[in-house]
Amino acid sequence: MRTVEHAADEFGGDRLEELPERVRDALGELAGAAKEGLLALSVGVGLGVLGELLESEVDEVVGPRGRHDPDRVAVRHGRDAGEVTLGGRRVAIERPRVRSADGSEEVALETYRHFAARDVLGRVVLERMLAGVSTRRYERTQEPVGAEADQAARSTSKSAISREFVARTRETLVELMWRRLDDVRLAVLMIDGIVLKERTTVVALGITTDGVKIPLGLWDGSTENATVATALLSDLVDRGLDLEQGVLCVLDGSKALRKAVRDVLGPVPVQRCVRHKERNVLEHLPERDRPPIKRRLRAAWALDDHDRALDQLRQLAADLERSHPGAAASLREGVPETLTLTRLGIRGASTNPCESMIECVRRSARNVKRWQSGEMCLRWTAAGMLEAERQFRRVIGHSDLAKLALAVERDLQRARPDANAHTSSTPTEEAARFATV
View 1 (spheres, rainbow, N blue to C red):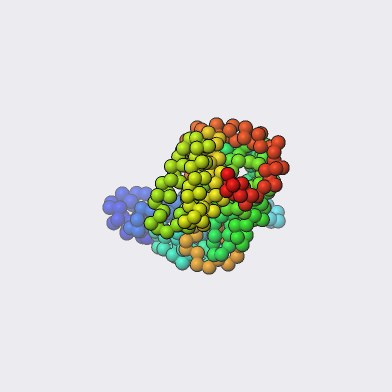
View 2 (cartoon, helix red, strand yellow; view 1 turned 90 degrees about the vertical axis):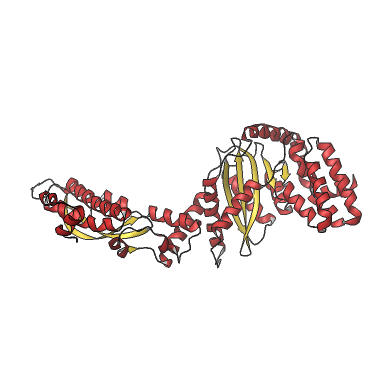
């Protein structure tokens, strides 16, 4: 403890002697904390205030010291060691204890319960880990709160931070997987897969008619297969996703995802990402032939006339058939679904919002060196998705999403009488029909 003489020297005056002894002792302690920085001083003041709050609550529950009260319901019961959360650490304090008047049970102090809760610690650990701080370096990121508080700090070791992060990410996984979707009016549903250490997690992102992006759910599997995607979509339906309202599904071109959408959601319109289709086609070509083909693809997709755009893509596939049959086959596969929005009278789309969310997951998990289980992949993916949600903004052109929803509903009404015929066809059959035109 700092002495009164030290405090007088550092605060510069004899007027300190005029203050009560308790105040002078407190100032002596704070004078030392002030040398360690403003934050350390603030922490010292805060811990002192916490002690006063605890004593004040004890007086409220038990009554003032030295006054006999035959009707009191609780009595003081000494002091004990305790811990409170201070930023990203736990700090030891001495807390007063109170027991019921008959001595049968401990009486909890609400002030201590509030400041001893671990929620703040869990939030800090989650934010720092998702920001790229490793468990080994976590302690080095702590703010300076004074030598005394640092020496008494706990829950900053590698193992303690790991346990806290696991517990917190399990909560985020449960939060994401139990979200109800009854009141969500989706205009767009995006589905994609992310691979973490040879394990694939299929994720779903929704865009409401107001332009708000919402992570909807995820499902774990070995690959981006139809079974995993079907399980994810079925889970969304079980949580209240309304199939009667039209929704546009945006996919990256995966046949497995397309089959899952057809099996669970029925004849909803599907828009394939034109950037994925472009990439797939160009990968079948040598470097020197790619620029002119890219220009022809983008020129066709930029047209507002659906029939004309489809004719140009057909002609391009025919031109590629002899010299690059692989590129021609890749272009023909599902190409009508790259023009779904054009057919609906809406300008083009991509899976960029979903890919941005996936990139946030990858960035958050970049320090993970060993993936131990599928549950670990799900926890990190869910935490990354909810972290991405905090950064989301409304999509550009969100005012047109209501028009898109109406166009999708009209298209769905036209498709439902032929739903059986639609669902019985396969992407391969569609490609075959396209090739014969």
